[in-house]
Amino acid sequence: MTPEVVAFGSDALLKFMPAAGAYASSTLADIVVNSSRDVVIARGLSNLIQAVNIRLHLEQGRLPLHPEFGVQIPIGRPWGDDLGLLYKFLVRGSMLSDPRIANVNNMQISLRSDQFTFSAYVQPIKVKNSQPISVTLP
Image (cartoon, rainbow, N blue to C red; front, side):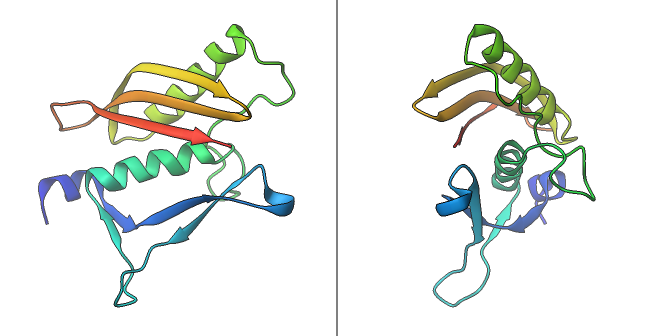
C-alpha cells in the first residue's frame, strides 16, 4: 500500500447524478463497476476528493449514526452576500472536520440558476501541494 493510500484510505468509487421526480433537488450516487463487473476503487487522494464530494452533498443530520457528518444548510433565506459568506463558513468548517484535511484556501462560491458551485484549494495532511476541488450542489 502506498503512503497516499494509507493517509487517505480507499473506498468504492461513486458516480454522482442528479435525481428526478420527488427527489429532484437531491443528488444520487451509484457504485461504479468496470467491464468485468468488479467494483472500481477510489484510492488515496481521489478517495479524499470523493469524501469531500459526499460530505458537501449531504445535509448535516441526515445520517442518524453520524449526525455531525455533512454541511449545515440554511434553508429559506434569500440569496445575498451575507448568505454566501455563511455558506463559505459552513462548507469550510465541514471540510476541515475531516482529519485528512489540514487547510482549505481560496474558497469561491457561485450561484447559477438553482445550483451552488463551491471551489477551493484543499491542503491534505502529509501532502505539500494543495489540490483544487470543485463541487456543484443542486
